[in-house]
Image 1 (cartoon, rainbow, N blue to C red):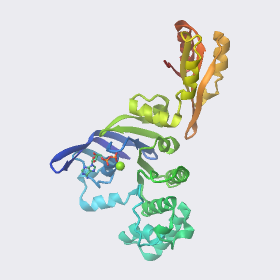
Image 2 (cartoon, protein in one colour):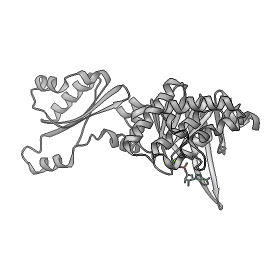
Image 3 (cartoon, protein in one colour):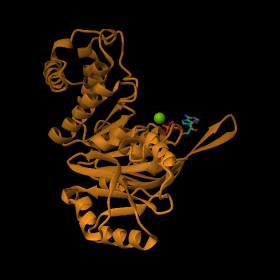
Image 4 (cartoon, rainbow, N blue to C red):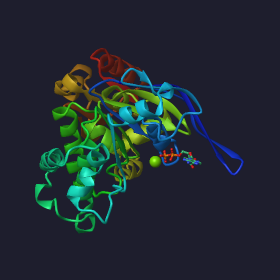
Length: 342
Ligand SMILES: Nc1ncnc2c1ncn2[C@@H]1O[C@H](COP(=O)(O)OP(=O)(O)O)[C@@H](O)[C@H]1O
Ligand SMILES: [Mg+2]
């Protein structure tokens, strides 16, 4: 549905060249909620703006709905833009216009007949849960309500694709949750493909099925959310994943361990990761019996990746290298991720 092939973008700022995108390849399938995550300045907004040609790539190809949009004429480009809605971190609403009029803007620009506009706007405000606010002005709304107006406006022309630029970054956690729920509903009920960018891993965790991690204009890791969360490879990805799974040994426990010096030499730590069905395996109990060890759980957390649970655990036991190897092998053979933490 969206294909970026070897896309480069270089800005020229007063003679200084800024390489915002350096060979981007991503492929968003119909029905995806595809998340791109990265720190500020990574190039995320620039990437998103390639998709509707708000910015033109310096080189590379952008294909949307099977069309190479670099090859379209002005009229064709306008037409394809109607199929692409966009929402923003700071909502970009017109403060002098009512909620109704804000949502109606794309329809007015599209020369839609007045009676059809009313019907469509009503329908959209209903969908986003703002049917009672149609006569209010943006200043009279909360951040979450403003973003709902933004979403309604973005959906006005029945797009196939919704681009979200940090859509929840200006919102508190609870409001973020409700906006993410709404985006999920947009995806499922209207069958709209979503490409979103964010610096918040919990956004990816809550609604995305695929993720790409961006750093300094490049995509350094990408894949299904379950795979990337289950086995992050790059340092940046690991940091993002840990920011939601929180699976390190708490400092207070490390301190207790340090203070308690007995048997330090043979103290072993393993990190275990159970995903999906494997969360049902009573692994600790099995190992305890099978290898005759006493196990202490130092940290355990459950993260839900949409419908898939993931459990991270750090366990500690006494034993020599040989025993650690044997236990690790056994766990690995059950298709459970395991690594020794030292
Ligand atoms: N219109 C522009 N002119 C010059 N430099 C730009 C422009 N837009 C973005 N940049 C630069 O490109 C880099 C990537 O920016 P951006 O895509 O906004 O990153 P992100 O959204 O990940 O924070 C930054 O160094 C930024 O300063
Ligand atoms: Mg940005």
